[in-house]
Length: 336
Image (spheres, rainbow, N blue to C red):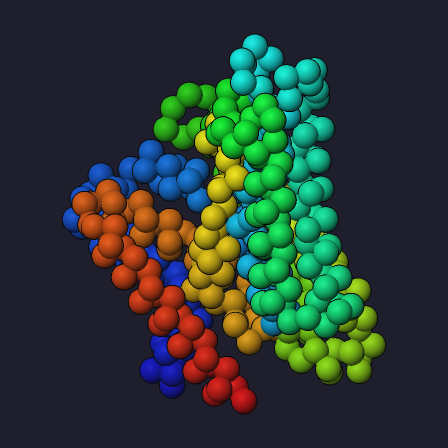
C-alpha cells in the first residue's frame, strides 16, 4: 500500500520533482545559481513565455493545437512598438503621429491578437477545419501581413527602436525598493494572468465546457454544450493572451521586428505538454503549465550558466519533450 502511495505521489507530482532535481543538479555544479538575482532573471525572461503557454493551454485542453501564437506575438509587438516610439527619434515608424496615451497602442495590439484568435475559432468551429491546419494557415497569413506592415515606408523593414520610457518600464521596471527582492512588473503581470486563467479553468462554465470538449467533443455536444460558440471564445481568449505577451516582449526588449515570436509556439506547446497538459485533450492545470515553462527556463538559463553547449541543451530539451509525451500517451492508454 505504501509503495502504491509513493508511486501515485511521484506520478502526480513528477513535473515538480523534475524541476527541483534540475535546479539541484545545476546548483551542485555552481552554488551561486541559487541566488535571488538568478531566480529573478529566470522569471523575468520567461514571464512572457508563460503567458503564451497559458494561451496555448486553452487550445490544447480542447484537443486542438495552435501554431499561430508565435506570429501573433510578433504582430502585437510590432504594432505596439510602432506607435510608442520617442518623439525625437529620427526614424519614427509614423513620423507625424503625436504622442498618444500608453494604454491605446497596448489595447490595439491585444485586440489584434484577439481578432486573430477569433478568426482561428471561426475557422475551426464553423468551417470544421482541423485546428492544426487552421492555425498553420493563419500563422503564415499573420506573418505575411505583419511583414507588409513592417516594410511600409518610411520604416522599410528596419528594426523598431527608441521606445518610450513609460512603455519599456512595463518590461524592465521593478516593484518595490531597489535591491535583490524587488519584483519585475512583467513577473507580476504574468502571475495575475495565471491567477485569472486558473479562475477560468476551475471556476467558470467556460472552463468546465473546455474540459468537456477536450474529453469528448461529441458527448459534450449531446449534453447541451454549444461546442462551436465555446471554441470561438476559447480561441479568442488565447489570441488576446498572445497579444499581451507580444506587447510585454516589445517592452522588455526595447524594440520589435517582424521576426519576434518565431518558434515561440513550439516552446509554448512543449511547456504545456511537459507541464501535464494532455495532447489528447481534456487534461491540464495552470500550475503544471507554469512549472513546464520554468523547466525550460531553467534549462536555457541554468545550463548556459554552467557552460553547457547550446547543442546539448537542444538534445536535453528534445528528450524531455519526448519523455513527457510518451508518459502522457501511456496514461491515456491506461485510462482507456
